Length: 67
Picture (cartoon, rainbow, N blue to C red):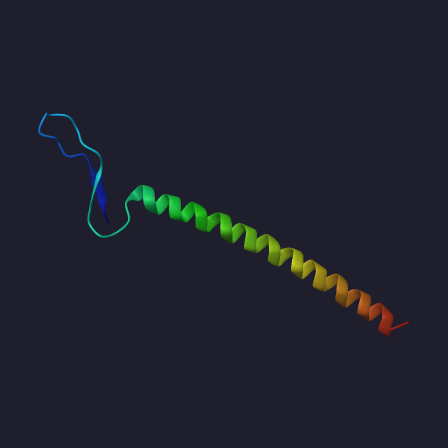
C-alpha cells in the first residue's frame, strides 16, 4: 500500500504531498471504491427494473396464450 507524505522544503516549510510506493493511497482507494459502489448501485437498479419488466411481459404473454 502506498502512502503520502509532505517533505520539508529548504526554507523549512512543508512541500506538497509526495506519493511513496506504487499502489493506491487510502484516499485514492476510497474514492475509487465510492465510484465503483455508485456504478454497481445503478447497475443493480437497472437490472431490477429490467427483471420487473420481463416478469410483466411474461405475465401478459401468458394471459394472451390462455385466453
